[in-house]
Length: 379
Image (cartoon, rainbow, N blue to C red; front, side):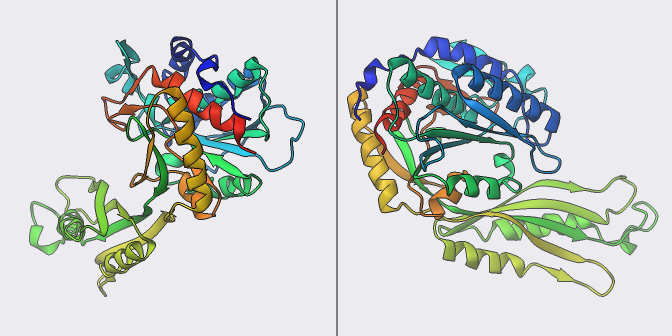
């Protein structure tokens, strides 16, 4: 059914007050107790909104996840799955540098844009429709996970299994443009890099050793220099050495590679694996492939979803365009499965993953109404 989306009872100020609790509960991926607390808070809030919620133990060493269903007479039939993540890239203590702060139509805080704001808007949209007396044609489920920011190594199978039960997938990741949603994402691969040197005393026998840090620095530059228009390479998270008076024997780093097409990513992988070598004396450079996100190219079903969203946005008074984006999300998986998936439905903001991460407050309501419009008519 079509509804008057402008009448959906969502108030940005009230939503921001609720979101504040989420933002001020820091939840970096690698801090399991913090993510568990965030999941518990989200689960409690969803229960208060009328959802039935199941907390799912997270992957080993990582936080719990939450699976929720809103009451519906067709529960158990294929419906709509909203997927999001509760983990952030911001370490504990970021609130001291990036406190929850409001100035005019902007509000700052760790994870407020990526993607606690979008998650909060989405679950609020479900409740707002119920408050209007609107029954969605299809049952609505929500899956909130705990490891998206590290490539979803532990919850990919859960996401794909849940998505397979449904007809549509909505992803309230940040809107990369004020009036844009995401209909495709690039292919992404992560790699572990390890340089293995030879030890010696850095003062008394410097030349007898071989520095793993120096090796990593040299190879890092060569790897990043392979970046071109088809495939990019970025090396970060570098750790090496323990004592300044010892020639470092091990240096580790991570590499992120991204391409618009799967074949370009595969060619990039072959180029990167060519750096892998081991010498008879134990020195060398190891390249190990880690998690990947498949390329997601817009399907006919995804574009039909976009056209609906575009019409709804027009009713809300703003134009809507679409794009394929480089930043990965769990929409990569569902889109690559061929499921109609619409991503980037979350709040409008900027500078995610930085100490200037912020949202435009009014987008909590406008994006919530956009999601509500989709929920109300998808069948």
